[in-house]
Length: 598
Image (cartoon, rainbow, N blue to C red; front, side):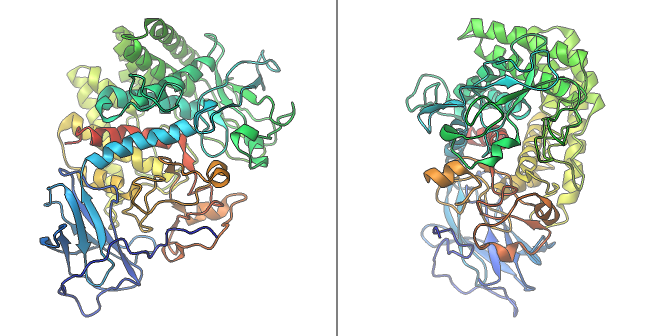
C-alpha cells in the first residue's frame, strides 16, 4: 500500500504553555483544528474551526509567532455541529494582520501551522494551470505526445452523421477523456476573465503549446487560447454546432490518453463520436437527455468568442475578427433555438443535466455589447437577467447533476460593468438575493458553509465565493465577507477532513494522494492544481454505479455524518479532479494573488 497522509498526522510540534481548560477538554484523539492550509490574506477574516468527534468543552486558544511569543489569546466560540463533528468551535484571529508563519494552539489538541500571507496565492493561481495543461487533448505537454488525433465522426440526428470532422484539441473534462463544450466554453471564458481582471497574478513560464519556456504571453492567456482554438473547431459553420466528443464507452478501459483503447464502433483507439447540438433529446443507447434547444451551448460559445475577440485584438487582429464573427453567429443560433443542449449519456444514466440557458445567453449578449456597443445586445442581456435573477441551486437542499450550470452567473457582473445605473442596481440585487439564500443555510454550522453537497460540491463552493467576491467589489458591502472566506478556507483545509481539495496546493499541506485518475495512478505523477469534486451527501455516494473504495478509509471517523469524502482512487464522486472547477477557481485565486480582494 502506498504511503498516505494520515488524518491524525502532526502538522507542527511545539512546547506549549498550559492553557486554561474546562474539566472535559478535548484532546488530540477526538478533536482537530482545521485551517486554511494555503493561508489567510492579511486583510481577510481569519477563522480556524475545531471539529470534535465526541462531546467536549473548549474555552481558549493561542496564536504564537516564529519566536514562540504569544501574539493573540482568544476565546473559542462554540458553534453548531456539522456532519461527524458533534461539536465545533470557531477560533477567530482576524486581528492578526502581519504576514508570517504562526502556530495555533488550543487545549491538548495537536497544534497547527497557520500562514498569514498573500504570496502563497500567486503560486497557487499558477499551479491551477499545471493541471489544465495536463488535461490537454491534441498535443499534451505532460505526455510529450499528441493524443486523440482522430476526433471525430458525427453521430445522431444530424445531416452530417457518419462523416469525419476535425475537432482534435481542447481539454479532457475530468479523469476520463470525454470533452464537452458545456464545461470547456465556460472554462475558457473564466480564464479570459481572470486574465482581463487580474492578469498580473499569473506568470509566464510556458509556451503556447504547454511546454516549458516563456513566450511573452501570460500562461493563463495561452491556456484560454488553447480553449478558443478547440471551440472554433466545434463550431465550424454558422449552423453547425457540436457539443461533445466521446461518451461513457470511454470508461471500459483504464488507459492513458496515449493508449486509449476505447472502441466506438470504428476500432480500438480510433475515431470518437462527435455529438451535434440538435435541439432534441439525445442518446445512442437506452438513456437519453432532455435537450430542448441550442441556447445553453450557443450562449457559452458567444461569450467566450466575444471576450476573446476583445482581449486578442491588439496582438492578433485576424483571430479577433474571426472570433467576433463567430460570437455573433453563435448568439444568433441561440436566439433561433432557445433551450438547453445537454450532454449525451451513453450506457449509464449520467449526463450533465443543465436545465437553464438564459444565463448563458445573458453572458453572451453582455460580451457582444462590450465588443460591438450595439444596444440590442445590452437590452437582451438586461431582459435575460430578469428571467433568472438567482442561480436556482442557491438556497436549495439539492439539485441534479450540473442542473444549474454555470454555478454562478457571470452575466450579472458583466451587465453591471456596462449598464445604466438602474441596470447596475438590479444586478447587485440579484447577486445579493442568491448570497442571502446560501448564507441563511451557512449559519447552521460552525464551518459557515451553505451549499448543497451534490456531486461536484467544490464547484458550488468556489462559485459562491466568487459571486460573493464580485458582489463585494461591485458594492463595497462586506456583509458576506465571512461566508466568502469560509468557502475559500473550506477548499484549502478548513473542513472536517482537514484536507486541501486542490491536489498539491499548497505543496506543504495535506491533500489527496490517491485521486481518481489513471494518469496519476499509472504514471505516478501528481495532478498539481486539480480541484477535486468534493464531499457529497452519503445518499448520493451510495446510489452511484460502480463506486468502491480500493483501500481502507483513513477518514472513516469523519465520514460518519451526512456528507462523505474519500481520498481513494475508487471514489469518482468525491476524489476526481475536474477541469471546469479548476478553471473556475483561477479567477478567485487570481483576485486574491493580485491583491484585488480588499
